[in-house]
Image: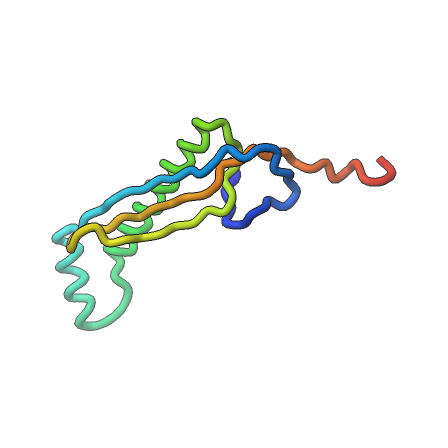
Length: 114
C-alpha cells in the first residue's frame, strides 16, 4: 500500500477513487507518564512518555485507515492527514484520514519512440 500526503504519486496514475478512509484511536494518559511529565516540566526537555504515546497512537490510527482502504480494494492512499482533539481532561483522539485510490505505475520506458 502506497501512502502519501500529496495529491499524486510520482510515477503513478490514479485509475479509480475509492473514497474517504479514516482511522482513529482515543488514548488516555497513564498515571506513571503524568508523574514523569510533571517532574520533566520542572527541568525542561522532551516528555518522552507522551512522545511514545503519540507514536503508538499514530501507528494505530494509520493501521486502521489502511485496513479500511484495503477493504475497499485500494492499493494507495493519497492526501493523508493527521488531526488530534481532546476528548476529556485525560484523553485525546488521534485521527488519520485520506483518499483511497487505485493506482498503476506509469511505464516510463514507452516514450515517444517506444
